[in-house]
Structure formats: C-alpha cells, structure tokens
Amino acid sequence: MVDSFPKMPDCPNYQQFYPLNPKSPIPIQTTQNRQEVRSCTRRRFAAKAAQTPAGGLGTIVCIFTHRRGAVPGGKVGLSGRRIVRGGTSRSKHQIERHLCEQTGKTRLSIYRSISAGFAATGCFPLGTVGCRMSPAQVLADLHAAVPLVGPSLLACDFANLQDEIRRVEAAGAQILHLDVMDGHFVPNISIGVPIVEAVRRVTDLPLDVHLMISEPGRYLKVFRRAGADLITIHIEAVAEPRKMLEEIRSLGAAAGITLNPPTPLEKLEDCLPYCDLVLVMSVMAGFGGQQFDTVALEKLRRLRAAGGRDLLLSVDGGINHHTIAPCAEAGADLFIAGTTVFSSDNYLRTIEELTSLARSGRDVKV
Image (cartoon, rainbow, N blue to C red; front, side, top):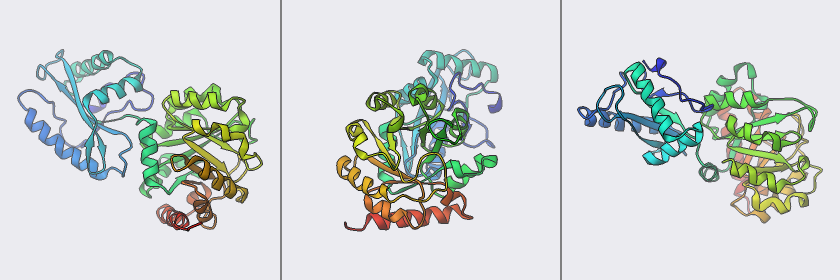
C-alpha cells in the first residue's frame, strides 16, 4: 500500500515517504487504537534515533492521523518529531511549517493531498519525510563536529554514485562537497543541477555546493532548490559579493565565499560579516588531484584571526595525510578531500586517519 501512496506534490527533494519498518503493517491511528499506535511509534522513534548519525540533520518522523477514525474524507492530522541522537524534538507546527516551505504549498493543500491519498489507498504511512534544517541548525551541527573531513564527490565513481555516498556515510562523513564547473570560469566541466538533485535524494547529509561558475547569481535559486545547504561563490566571479551572499542567506542556505591562491585576501575582507563559511583554495579551482599550495596556510591564519570561531573555515585542494595537520594548525575546520578519500581502498580508515591528524594539528599551540 505504501508504494501506491501519492508523493507529496512539487517537492523536489523530500517527496518520498519511507516506512520505518516496511515488513510490518503500517498502523492507522484512530480513536480506538490511539494508545497502541503511539506506543509502537515511541519504540520506532527510539530505534530510528539509535541509527541516526550525531546531529540528526533533519530527519522527520511523521504520524498521519485520521481525526474521525479510519474513514476516507475525515480530517487529517499530523504529529511528529525530528530524530536526533538519543531522542526526538520539534513540534507539529514546526513540521507543518517545514513541509510548507519545502513544497511551496499551503498547509491546507498539503493536508488535502494527504487526505486524497488516504481515500485512494485506505491507509496513511507511518514513516519519515526529510525536511531541511535551517542554516543556523546546519552550521551549529557542523561547528560542533569539527574538525570535519568533507569528501568531494568530484573524485568518486559516478557510475556508482549512490553506493559511493553510502560508503562515505558509513565511514563517518558528516558533509558532502560538490564542485560545479561550467567550462568558462574554470576550464573544466563537471556536474550541474541534476546531479545535486540526485545526491539530495539519496542522503540527508548537508550538501556543500561550490560554484566554480561565471554569473553564479543566475543559479543560486536552482541550486538551493536542488538541495544545496551551503552555497559558496568565487570572489573572482562576482562584482558585488555582499549582495549575492545576502541573497544566498535569504534563500535559506548558508553563504560561503572562496578565493583562488593568487587572489589577495584583502579582496574579501569586507565580505566576512556576510559569510557563514570561507573556503580557502589551496589549488587553482577547476581540477582535482593538484599539488597543495602553501600560500593557503597564511590565509587560513589571517582569516581565523579576523573571523573568530563563528566563521566556518574550509580548505580545498591537495588535502592528504601530509597537508591536513598544517591546515588544522592554521585554523581550518573543514577539510575537502576528494582524491585522498576516493582513491583509497578503505574510506572508513582514511577518513578516521585524516580526522585524527586534523585533530592533532588543532591541538598544536601556535
């Protein structure tokens, strides 16, 4: 019955309902079995929370209820909680607001769709529907988890993209980095909106989208709608970075800015109050597998001093077992690693080793 339940309309990233236990019957909550269903739900909440990575990152468990009993045409209700490690949080009204934001529909039209599904199938799903967390929540989770290794999907096996994502998730990755190249701002061409959408469908991890493109302002909305949680633009590609950073924030994403090795740091100093993230490129943007440029270390030190600990400081390019500790010592929080992770035969070991080296670098007293 779940397979025939209609998807949420016009919700590109979070439109599937996932039963918590597909092998067991999906209970319909009525006035007669309310306590039984709620007891079952609490057990499922606990089981789901135990499987959820630290931070929770926005998984929602929803119970759709029928307020006039299990009769098609009755009023539909909703209750639910956001799964977090060790428990659940978030009220019904917060969930409703998130569903409205992500579908672009009103609360009434969402419930009408759910009710129509009940009339067609005779059941409601007890399941999960992903809702994006606010930028503040995403950033708070990331800051709490630093140092972080961010696998760069540019280096993964695109013929097995979903499997690659599952493997780095299992290895402990808490963020994914996606490089978007247009063949104009940089000489290479990589991925675009369809790949970001596909990645968003198969993971709840935050997506850190790095736009190596000319005129990035034309594409902010589509990449946000595709699933980007953090959007980073190049200072070299925009005339008015402050305006664009404010637009990214207004779209509900965290705003990032980046600069290539030859670009002086002074070019972006005025932008820092409008940034949630600064990405220091330690190679020229456009290709993976380049050698690390040590000019990044001085930039990291100066940015850490200027931005304080509230600024998420990222570094990308040539990150490996030899370069990650000096970057951490210089102040980096997030280490984008593509070739180092995806060329290894054991993602878990590699990410753990890199994280340990970064942690040791952060412990060095400068």
